[in-house]
Structure formats: C-alpha cells, structure tokens
Image (cartoon, rainbow, N blue to C red):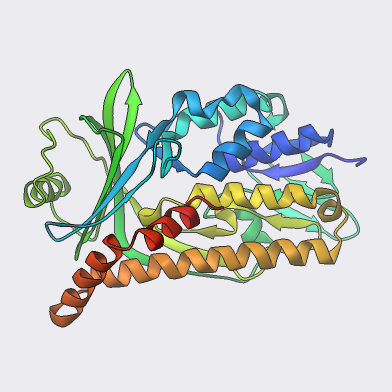
Length: 362
C-alpha cells in the first residue's frame, strides 16, 4: 500500500494487528490517545488454547507457555454449594492466566516505533481520500482498523449503528497471595459474581474479579462472600479501589468503506465468562485469513468477517445473558431447577468436555 494503514488504539488488539501487518510487510501507524504505556495493576487475562497458539505463532519470543499459569480445573459454585467441576487431563488445560500488562508490554516491543502517543483522533474524513485528524497532524491512509476500545471514537465518528446496555454492576480487581493448585473458582450470587484465577508470580496468587451491584462497603461484601462460601482468603490488607462500570456494547455491522472494527470497538462483554480478549484475538485471526482482500475493500471478505465475528459474539452474548439472568435472578422453583441442572451437568462428562472445547475456541 502506498500510504500506511492506520490502527486506532495501541492496546493489546491494536499491537497484535501491528504484528500481523508487519509480518506481511504492510506499512502502518498506531495512533494512541494516551501519552505512554500505562501498567494496569492486578488485571489478568484468561487465554484460550487457540489464543496462545496464535500469539506464539505471531511472535515466538512471547513464549506464553513459559510465564502464564495453566488452569487444570475450574469450579463453579452457586449459593454455598459446588455445582460444576470442569477439569482436564495432564496434557490439556482449561485455560491459562497471565498479567494483562505483561502481555501488553511484550506485544509493544516490536511495534513501538510505529506508535504515535498522545494522538487522540478528532475527526475522520472518508471520501475520495481517507484522512485521520489528530491535534498535531493529519494522516492520509487507505485503511483504518479501529481497536480503540469500548468507547471507540472511530465507531462514534463514522456513525456505526450499535446497541449497548449497562449491567448495573461494577467490577473490582485485585490480587492476593493464596495457594491455588492451578484451580480457578467462580461463585454466583444474586448480587453478582466472584472469580478467583490462579496466578504464579514467584509465589502463588489468586487474581480476584468481583462483579457486584452493591453500593455499600465493597470490601465488607467480599469478606461476607469469603465467609459464606468458606473460601478462606486472607483479606486483611485487600484494596479494591473504585471499580469500573460494566456494560455490553455491540456494533451491528463491523465495517464501512475503508474502516473495520475489531476487539472491544466491535463488542464488549461482561467479564463473567472471561472471553472478551480472546474474542478480540479471534477478530485478528479472522482478519489475517483475508487480510489483502479486506485492505482492498472486497465486499465478500468484509461480509465474511462481519458475519463470522458477529455470530461468535452473539453466541457469547447469549451465554453471558443466560448466566447473568439465571444466577442473578433465581428464586423459589427456578433456583431448585438451576441447582438440579448444575448437578446434572456435573455428572455428564461428555457435555463438560464440549464446554471446555467451546471455551477454548475464539
């Protein structure tokens, strides 16, 4: 291409797209509104087998199997009872956990010379020429990949039709020292969910993701769950901060002339299923399959991308909404049916195997 491709956003998905373009010797620039890389403490990512394979194939120096923590068992609890156990054999794993900032930092290394920091996008002119306006410079390009997150400026400026709703919950994240035996745990209550993800960083930790609709003392709420489920965490020095609002958003179509949405700019999800980043990586995997055709604005390739990724995202939305509705609003007979259903699933190894296989696909 005669003009560099523009990637909006230097997050993990933007950097990963940069790696793909670099692989095919396609010039690009990444425009990032932040002034520098910001480490987000305690945030972790649960990576599927497909994600790890793709990331390692794009950049062998990532060597994710060396520094991520394999999850060999996942336990799901409702009320104070263990409902479902998803486990794997010694050759497989349910998922792998790593620090978000560590993955981001590693991906930045080989594309950092192409990142222009402190460059928020102010406007996009998409006529005969595509021009991206920032405070300091106008960039001419032939194509834009929008990876600028849940509040995508590109999506807003280009009038992509989208839907969104808020869950009425906030998410709080932290890490605490705890023995985990490579077991992830998820607890469901009417007020929200608590996920414990195993993490090794010299010593064993649990990464905590606490999603709740509570407006009271969040640390006390967490302590109450700790006691109710008999989890046994030492929360004496835990800090949860202000948390962040949880919302779902989805673009109805993922492209327009010369512009493609991917990652959180296309879809955002409740962290309950831990699949948001994996679906973004899946977007990049699909882009690579038809990269040249997409850059040429070939409608068949664009329709294929939009249809495949929207179908996958709709499936995940349905799963999350079903979990959110089932575990967040159960009373009386519905609760008995739910508990019976969990016990049935726990005794159905073929179904549990399929759940693990589905969760490991992007």
